[in-house]
Length: 273
Picture 1 (spheres, one colour):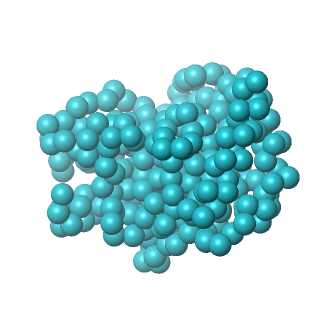
Picture 2 (cartoon, rainbow, N blue to C red):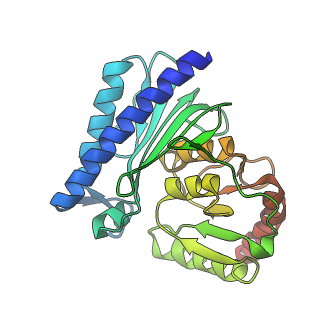
């Protein structure tokens, strides 16, 4: 893929995400309605989630009819170009529902099957509409917040690292994740749980977090954010040589990653019994 084509893909993702963010922000101001529950009563989808995804899908299809689409709220389709758009229309839906100004539109375009172990993410955009922040990255070209180039924090010892994580919607999973936090809380500076994985990954890129880890993320949660973190200098993966995915995602500067990953593995192993 040439740099010019990648730049065009990034530009399309950026303008689409900004337009989608404006729609989400407008619908939030008008009042949010729950459309349905998904994995549990706590895991909701709003009418705005569906409307925003429909807008994104239409804009991308109009511009690139041969591409595939893999979104959170609609049926996946396979394209003929070898490229797939991986989309979370509103990441942080519960924040959105409650009016907490920490949610995002996440759009990535990947080459290959929609699977982190095999795909190449070419471009990604994450927009936080309440703050007007636009994070962007293209493979090999760095990560940016607006016009500012991003760089992860380096040289941070684990004991002084600010970590971010997230919890699932099912009660048993949350209990397990809380036990992991209990095992880590004395090992790091502090732990934050802000409720939007895409923005947490961008926070690592921007130096607002030193580490982010979570288990149970879907592809649309991290496709764009993981690229942005990587292009800012983060190592993104799981245990050993595993790729990031639903089992685990870790993002941190490489020197901190090597301190954190074995400690997290030790805690996981202990909890597994």
